[in-house]
Image (cartoon, one colour):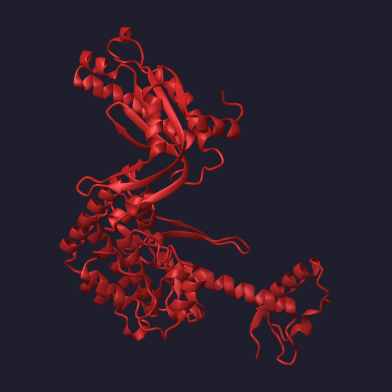
Length: 483
């Protein structure tokens, strides 16, 4: 016998669909089946369902299922999960959940914030909160399966306590859900969400936390998913453990993302595996922070590709460049100024002037090679392709540098000393770039082009830029408006 339905619901649904253009004839109530005094009727088994009635009943069942899910979620209470206060459910509208306020946003946001210090004493409670929250969800029968566990779905409150959010995928659902890179192999091929799938996602999230990057961030999505889903691969295709990651964390990761779902640990076992991690994780993050600072310094002094090679301990090979423009600049009368000013005032003068020139380098795309005393050296068409306008770029930079220097006072405490005067020299041609030295390495440039550019500066005049014939020819060719 078919399910019983409210007679007024059937007729109301039929009228709605007929108003939208559906062609159905309205039957009398007696033709719908045997009714009762409360308005219920039974649909005869021999009579096929109309399409409009099938759609209506499916929509009603989905709405009822959603209401049951929301009631269940609102009853869940645990210190390590985000509390759902209420839900607003309207047929045909997107469901709105009212949740507790988590003022620091997600763990994923904090991981992408390089200024946030993620150290052992901060990380250990976060991992503990996540594991306790997942243990609580999995303790229900049937279990509450998260289905999309990742750092972006771990929310942080003002006390840096982590709480699991965006959970509630029912174990009754028969299709895969989640974010692909965090999905277990069995889910990628259409399997249902499961507790073992949550454990796999936790393993990927552990990598995400210790690497402070998204998994497979530099790989092609389709390639990664096909490789992860291939359970025949030995070893399975997974992210490489971050360099220096504590061995206990690596061990837990590898167990969590095992190909065989039955071979993955429970969250109780994960809690034991990560217990007492504080000393190891603190050492790991301290070493990585020191390495990051060293890398930042190298990137501030060397071009990116040179800095990366030095970090890897590689020997940098000389680079030949067919055409670059080199600029030399120094302060006119700097030796006399140094005798009149105290060392601190000289340092302040250079800091203010070179700060202005650094901004001009960013504006004009000039690579600041180095400063030696009061000399400032820049080059174009060295790190990126500027072959179409490298001489014109440098000419515009020189003009602006002279103008800016005339606004920089020699001594802020004594305006009567006037402003800075500089002289500039430029040359264009081939050169060689290389790292010299081992104890205090320096990336510099060599060749006749460089030597002649330096001579152009030393023979120039205050407030003027002297360029070679080759540079002048290129400037006229690349930007005739420059005079």
